Image 1 (spheres, rainbow, N blue to C red):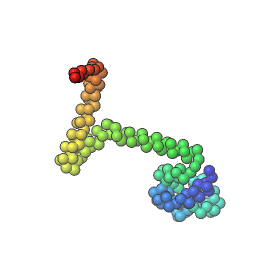
Image 2 (tube, one colour):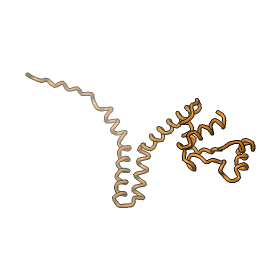
Image 3 (cartoon, rainbow, N blue to C red):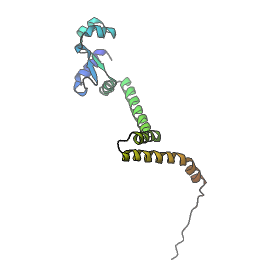
Image 4 (cartoon, one colour):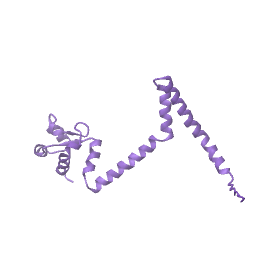
Length: 151
């Protein structure tokens, strides 16, 4: 897709982008020609363009939402995979333990510090006893009781 096509897509959907967060229009920046030329644009391209958008990662993610290309779908898949991988890390025992320890060390009240310490201790006990519990579960005999009902 050409730069002009991308600019048009952004311009047509500009209300969905936050200026200064998702994008900066370099056309409005002082000494645009020098800045944009250092990025590899020709002087004629800078003069002719009504907008020259520079996107943040957040803005780029929004751009792929309005694109319909194989590359856009590839990037969208990658974003989804990264989102779920990050969610898994955030919900992991290691992360919960770190947050609980941080709360215990930097809590604003004695109760916060106690809660953090208790949570940290619970997670540590669960981690330490998990192998023992697994061993006990494996060694449990399968016992099926048949209950006879007499009439």
